[in-house]
Length: 469
Image: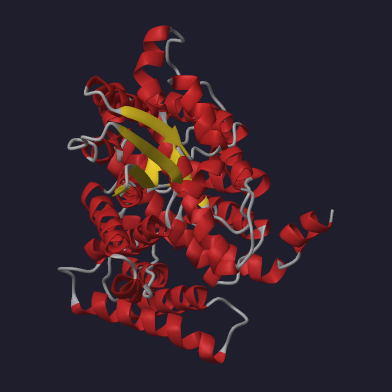
């Protein structure tokens, strides 16, 4: 009960104000994602509303903002182009089911296998991507566009020095929009990106045949969406954990993402997941509880249905200025120190993770390749087995497994003694390849007339040796 009150009522005023800021910031993002997929703006806006509201109740990270996202939009492009909206909605429903199952199986426990270097690459790539996505609203525009963006940035950074009762991004948006309207200056606005829906989302079943053929079409997309969505959501959750020095229930977050996507598909929304940019805005604006996420979703639908005529007049350079602040906050500036001080392998992993994410615009691909690369570097590092010889005793130092067996076997190529002892007192047998390598060495030497004695195996190595030999 105490946790419930703390998460919902422990930060009411700041959560409400932060949610309002996020609600405003969600609109241009959702419209852009709808454009990427090739769907009506309502599909992304409804998704952002339903996912934000649902995850505020069932998610595992208070203050996390989930909605329609670019990562999920990219996965859906070909499905929409080849099969249409109804299949996109069906894939969203199936995505929710898969995520719910994965969350129930404890998928978040795999987070511990993501190295810090990959996390840094993920965060820095997102910061850069957020910055890059704002450039179309600025580059090649009028001088007034740049002025509004720069002044917005100045306000966002300067206001908190003198006034903290209202989030600086909200003040900047209201002030600069008012200035734009009163001055009559011509700027690109939210209304230029797409039309606003005029009604609440309604429940309906996707109009598709319920057969195996449909499942074959949507399953590959749903699996990809599930992985991308959970990866981005769990990593974003970890980033917020670090920012706020508070823990979160990541398996619950995974289940919550599944529930949200499952329901969203029945209300005409596309699949979504956590948004690190809006989540950072929320935290930086003071939003720490579930109320901030709920407010963001409710205020979003209030804006587009009740205040749609006002919202469409908000200048894009102003929102771009706010998002540039988010990109600069998201980027981990300590990474430059990390590059100087960390082992070269970890620096390489971080840089490659950033490069792949920026090249593919796919967070999942970048993170997975980063993890694989880290694993390969780790394997290379620990596979340095050494064999020293002294009076017929060969001492093995280092773990013996698939990556170190070649050097181990080669160490006995020139052995000519009649009797030798292979001492594993400073080693450990890790897999079947290790036992197979020992057997190969013994077989080769005994064929030459050498008597081989194995000693020094610890308890677990002894069990493996006897089991497989």
